[in-house]
Length: 513
Figure 1 (cartoon, rainbow, N blue to C red):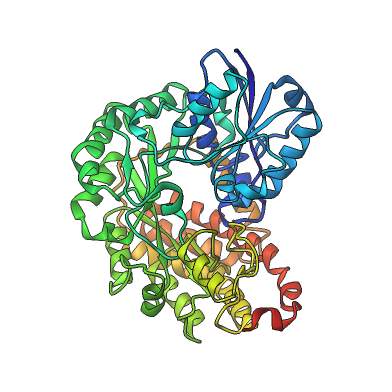
Figure 2 (figure 1 turned 90 degrees about the vertical axis):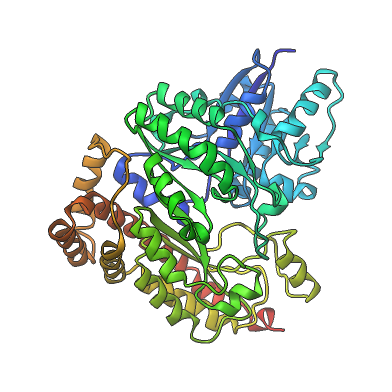
């Protein structure tokens, strides 16, 4: 039976590291990425259904959209919980059945059993067809548990046509799901498995071509858990196809992705990625303290020259973004100074430093629960100065040390120092085309006024730009971007740090053994 489905993507909290709330204003965009999961769900729904997508990160949820729908389909991550609950409440108030899926509901399904009509858990490619069959027969169940992992070679091209692409800073696609590693604090293996499952080259080319035909020109994020998890397939099939397509289309996109630090071990792979149009990669570095890496089974980082690996990746034309964590049991008292020194020396401009959290179901979660150290559920925002467990380090010392780290890293002077370190090691060999768009020109002009004139760190803004212009002029646009990022991170951390007095006022006994 033909239906009208409203696909709703809840809002991210504004003050999160990856929201890029303040940076997006410079390029007049509303959100970083469209909701790829819901776009994939849209492609899996019957072709005769009418679909509407509402992304609350770019527009409000209107009552007329809810009244139009026969059912409301919601997908969310843990960090979007508050917004997701609001969407469910509004839909139910109008008598609309709610279908929910995504990481939030998959990991916390028991907490929504009374508020959601149908929970389609795990990967939609497996459970959604069964739900649709039951719905057609009028016998849809309350919960569909994932029986395993999907063969994503059968995943259709996402419905990119449902989104207002001009409202986003970048588009996104997916090549693989799953990660071969088993880090104690990570829930990726729970959600997507240890064995990386991959799409084939024709699938990826169809998705890129779909974006190209819609008129997109700009960044495309490969949202893989670990892009290099299946290197053999990547080098033999995927990257050669990407290289060929990018050359044919004159490099309309710049690609970026997530990978593990052992990317540095494979020069051929890095060269192929750059040739295909990649110029940036996020890497979970976590900590420069080897004992903490050993503690959480981050084997790919343990006993490795992390600084040398970052330098090597930079020298091959890939910009490293880094994830860092404080709060491991093995963290020594001087970890805060060590963390700052490592990040400053490495030249990682986008360094997300957060406090350790224990997502439900992970090895860390189970361990802390057995030890009686869990306090609350994970909210997927490890940069808001909150903890969901009792740390081994004194709580007050950990919180103040964390504040010290982010204050130093994202001060105008700290950012200036990292930009200097970056331009010493980075070699700009990317094939991705740089196009001077109106958005980029406007961002530069706005940065002059917002950061270069009115911001307290304006001295370092001009020092960075002038030094880059004379020393490595090719990196001038990149330096402008870095300054805008730095401005965003300062605003985010300052907003979050306002909570610190309240957090420190929590009775110390709660955070002690």
